[in-house]
Every structure is written in C-alpha cells, then in structure tokens.
Image 1 (cartoon, rainbow over the protein chains, first blue to last red):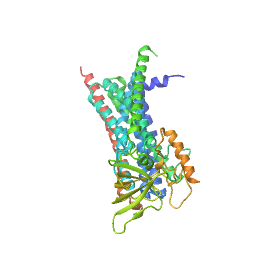
Image 2: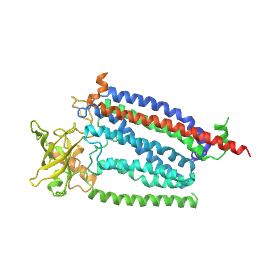
Image 3: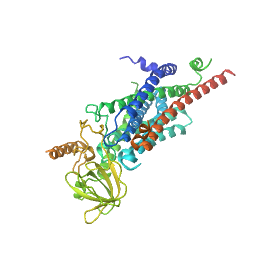
Image 4: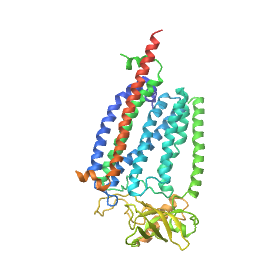
Length: 245
Length: 174
Length: 53
C-alpha cells in the first residue's frame, strides 16, 4: 500500500486546493437530499399511529444527533493522528469540525426538547441519554474554549487534541445509554437496518436526511478547513498564488 | 515508524487505555447506583428507595385507567407483566398516555401500597407506522417485548437482560 | 394547506424544531465562509507586511 496520497493530503497547498475543489461536490447533493428529505418527511410520509405529526421532528432530530456523534468521533481520530504523526492537517480538520459538531449538538438538544414536551410531557429530564448528550455539548465547548485559550496554534492543537481523544469515551456511552440503563428515551430506530422499525414511506425520508446532513457537514468542514489551513501557513509562496492577485 | 513516533503512539494508546478503564469503572458504578426509574418487580423486591420519591416505570395495564368524573384525578396500574402497582395522579397527562403504553411516574409509594404520583411522563418506543395499518415493522408497540419494558430487576448484564425480556415476552404471548 | 401547517395540532413543536435546525445549517454556512474569508485577508496582510522591508 502506498501512502503518497496521505502525505500529499498533509501538504497545505494540496489540501487547500483539494478542499476547495471538493466542496461543491458535497454541497449540491447535500442541498438536494435535504430538500427531498424535507418534502418526504413533512409532506409525503404518513403521520404516526401513536404520535401523529409530532414524530416528524425525528427528521431533523435524529440526523442532528447522528452528526453530533460522528463529528466528535472524527475530531478524536484526527486529534490522535495529529498527536502521533505531528500532522498539522489533522489538527486543522479537528479544529474545523468542532463548531459544526457543537452547533448540531445544540440542535439535537433543542429539537429533542421540543419533541419531548408534547410526547413525553417534559422538556427535560436528567435521564442517561439526555444527560450524556448534554455532556457532549460541554465537551465541544471545552474543546473550543481550550483552543481559544492558547496563543500558540501548535500548543492549542496538541492540548485540545488530548481532550478530543479522552472525551470520545462519551460517544459509545451516548449511543448505548438507552440500552444499558432505564431511560425515558426510546431505543435506536435506524441503527438496525436489518429490521427497520418503520415502513419505507417513513424510513426513506429519514435516510435521505441522514445522508444529506452528512454531506452538509463534509461541505462546511471543507470550507472551514481551507480557513484553518491558511491560518497555519506563514507566508508561503502558494498562499500568494491562491489568495493574492 | 521512528522511535519518537512509536513513543507518541504508545502515549496516546496509554491515555486511551487509562480513560477506558476509568470510564468502564464509572460505568459499572453507574449501572449499580444510578437508575432513572424502577420497574414494579424491582419495587416488589424492595430495591426502590421506599422512604423517598423515586420514579416508577412500566406499562399502563390494559383496562386499568379510571378517571374520576369532573376532576383531574386518575388511577391506573403500572405493570411489567410480573408485578403491578396502583398509581394515583391528579393533573395533566401527556398526549401519549394510553393503556398498554410505556409510562414513567415520579412520586412516593404510600404505606398502603399505592404510588402517589406528582408527575406522569409517557415513554414511547422506536417503532413508527401509519394509523390503521397493522403490518408491523420490527416489534409491535404495546407488546411486552416493547423496549419500554426492556428492563429487568434481576438482569446483571445488558445481554442477559435482553434475552430474559424476550423469554418473558414469549411466555406472555402463549 | 392549513392542515399541513397545523401539523395535527403539533405546530408549536414541529415548526420551531425545523426552524432551529435549518437556522443552525444557515449559520454554519455563514460562519464557515466568514472564517475562510478572514483567513484569506489575514494571509494577504502577512504577505504584504513581509514584502515591505
């Protein structure tokens, strides 16, 4: 196996240009998928026999929750790679991803709360799933706060990466919290594609949303990555070629 | 890999291992001590803190809901299909409060064995389908296999309790 | 149309949930572009100050 692609990715100009070239390839499919998911979820999917139309909150809540976990995992892996191989590009990726993950974690908490009030009868309970997701939000805030606390980018990269790696333990806890403990929150619906828990008319819009949100993250993180790469480059000639003129 | 990289890799693995162990210990402590709600079997076994407020979870037994006309007063049985506990509550019920559906009530167990609730929360499952259609995707709602009930007073591990719930379910289905 | 907007009576929960999520998406796009733009300008400034001496 050849590692040239990996080393080329680590080269800032190559990374900057690749990120710029790839962005539209993620952004447009994301826009189309989310639009289709919105139409499918809000209009075409039938109401639920128990929850009526309130269950439609799932179409924004579940994909947001998925992003909140996926993004943190990406940050932890990137942070570990950055720590071990001293790879600036990996640190840049983690730094670029954090605010996106934090915002979708907040969206998860708020939409969950808006779903919980009419269905469960409460906005918030100190339930294992809800509490661990709130902890994830604080981990994101801690990560960003830690980064902001260091003047020196390299030290910020390293210290925050340790937090990202350590905090990743919370990700499986969130996912399995509804299995391990008594919880107000129901079990996972889509994770078992082998035996889907809803008919195709409800499932297809949800899957479109999952894919759409994931591609949306990819597009946004690439734009942020370009910014992070530029901030890490001190007066290299390629920067002049890219942003000069 | 160069020696320094190997050292850094070992360091990161070491941190991960340490955190996993700490996390694992915290989890097992959690599993024993932190319970969001108790099921009737646990209450019957004396595992719930009877002197103080706690949460009771289970299914609303079929045909057990009695409303006092002209008031917010409601009585129902919470069951895990092994034990039942009568619950009294006065107040607004969530939209999803139904018979044969998951419920979590917060309150105190009175000496006469009645659970006096000050809050009633509905617990729904992860199964969705259109109204009027009875084809099932996954497990039917209201079924004792409902994960709202996927708790067992005696279960020591998640895996064991999963299978014991299914067994209980097949017993019930007979 | 009114039936759609009413969401079976759950409109006070459904629409805010969608608004919050789409708002978060919009903000993400805006913040990402702003970060890249600021980084570009900062890089340009660094290049110019280096050329002077």
